[in-house]
Structure formats: structure tokens, C-alpha cells
Image (cartoon, rainbow, N blue to C red; front, side, top):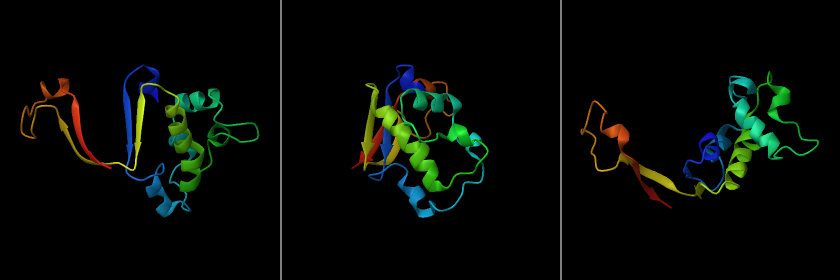
Amino acid sequence: ARFAASGCKVVLIEESGTVAANVGKWDHVRLFSPWKYNISERLLGELEEAGMYPAGEASPAARLELTPTGAEYVSEYLVKIVELLKLKKNVDIFMGTRVEDVVREGMIKKDDLDGKVRAGRGFLLRVRS
């Protein structure tokens, strides 16, 4: 969301058809750390400003010391981030899409091992939907 707010092109790719579906395997389990260590205060402010927490629904800011379950983390934070990103014109979201490979444009793995040229190259993704 920070990159999207700065005008950068953002692409979000999720293999499943729902946000953070992998968390569904352990959604009843509490995270190891409280909300304050699992959220961005800046992003939380953007979510609140955008009205993602309607009246009567407490945002994680009200419970920073509590430890959320996987289900709470997804529904009360991650899903809301995706909803916020959907409002941005410079964000493309691809659900049900698997990333097969990520490479630097015009390079192979052993090219430019010190990274000077590699850093200036864009990424190419091979995806399957």
C-alpha cells in the first residue's frame, strides 16, 4: 500500500482465490506475537482513514497488545489491505494465479553476481492461472 500511495505500479498475485488462503490451515491458532508487531501503523491509519473499519468494528489499533488468531489477522487486516489496494488505479490484483518463476529481465542466475547491473533490471514473472 505504501508503494501504491507513492504512485508506483503495484502487482499483487495470490495463488488461491481468496486472500491468504494458506492461513486457513491454521486460522484457529494465535500468532506468536501481538498485533503491534504484525501491522504497519502507517497502513493501519490509511485503512481507518478509508473507512475500512466501520462504526462498531474495532481496528487492531484498539488491541495492540492482544495476539490475534490467524482468522482475525486475515479478516481484520489482510483482507482490508486488499480492499484498500482495489481502490488504487496503479494496482493490479491477480487472484487464482501462481508465480512459477521470477527472473531479472535479460539475465540468467549466474549473470552479474556482484549485482551492479542486476539491480537496474526489472523483474519478469512467469505465472499460471
